[in-house]
Length: 173
Ligand SMILES: [Zn+2]
Image (tube, rainbow, N blue to C red; front, top):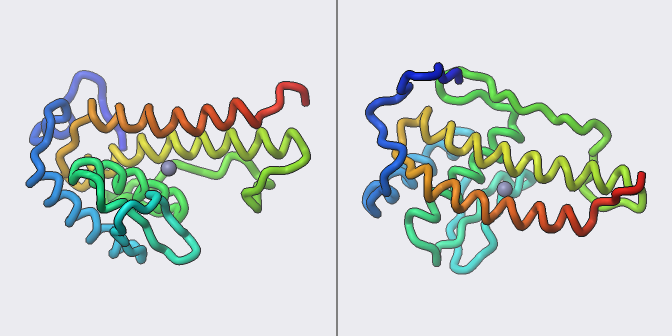
């Protein structure tokens, strides 16, 4: 998707105002439908760790969170799905993500510092991409999104990956 500077690509959506619980619930429903159309399902469980399993094609969402948080997290997890499927967005745009780290066939830490750095860097890269592409997805599906709160969530979530990466990555290779 190309956004031209100085133009509002989607004037019907207010990107900077909080959304209501009703809007979040409605968006959540539409997103679950979109995910189902891609061959994945969404499972809401109390106090589970939000995650995606490509093996079972299931996205797990913590149902103890508020509607807005569930909606934003599902946007992010849906972007992981798109990245994994190397799918196209509903508007026909091909998702630009490519796996930039060849050789990463199995996502495990390795005794080799280069492999560990590759793993951690690719993890952080995919996290950043999945948050950005989650916002793109909301845009394409014409769903409301409070970019401020969405990015606050992204900073917090990506921060945990960066913290882990800083602990495991080696400076001497
Ligand atoms: Zn993620």
